[in-house]
Image (tube, rainbow, N blue to C red):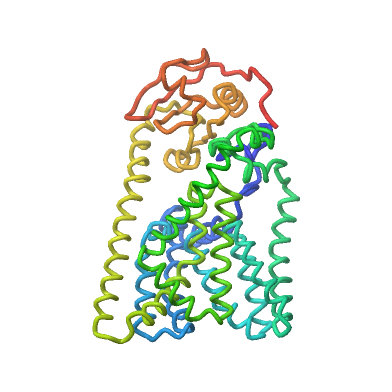
Length: 445
């Protein structure tokens, strides 16, 4: 089990999936597994579906740049930059929302330009893309604000209404599904009332009272998120691109698609930083930027052409830009492997120390994939809750890593409760056998 929000009150497993996360990435991976799972294995088959989606990104970037009136060489340069990937390169081929959001977001801005010319069909397409983007990323619903702007225009009202109807139909269908399987009562609290990010993985609900009591800390976190997320955006757009994007956006400011891109970029940045604060700084905002990157790089191509023109030096500048993106791509791949690959290798080396049967671990999904066994996340509430989870789900061991929830620090430092045996250590992984764990208190919502 990845998170107790999926199974409130220690509900029996298995449970209905996706009570918190939206489903498009899982559906796309399932399509890959259905088609290629017998040949490539489940993970590579799922990944192949995302690689196939990512393969379209250079093309749609080129098309967007040409629609923005960039000449062919600059449009090709933008396509090459997006094809290299930059900081997002590892994410674009991962079984995650990066590639789907990037493709859907770019197509949205492409279609939005036509909808702003009064085409209700393009408006309906925009609505479908908003719905799909919402199913890829929750903040994709904010793209619907651009449809409201169309409704406000006399010549674009039909396009805006058509798009809004389609978007609401898709979003409404998923919301109806949520109601059918049961929406966790603290869904909003876990998104917006966190004082510490690890509380997202607790059984006890975050409370408004605790949030208000920690208001100075909360305000500080939001201020910090504004800075951190701004830097994330700058690096995601390859550092040198933001000034060029600004030049391109200023030149094309009369275009509705450019205004929508700029406005939504600001809206998502503020929403992520000020509403979903702790989620945003733990990767959520970086994910959000995927929907903006290809169109933004297309704008940078226009800005580059405006700043450099057709002078001989333009080739040098273009080559330098691509070299920079290539270097960032290589660095991102190396960093990704150092962060996730190294951890995966360390976990694989510890598998033989884990007794047979289900176990508790901080990253249940990763351990499930690596070990092929049942895994339940260690509740962030601490050992008392962990004992309840172990009793309820039959866990035979507790796995602690150097990165663990703060409530487990006493165990890490040697203070074991009676229901835990002495650990067996593999590198930075410690495996504690569980003996007769019983639920000592009322844990739950």
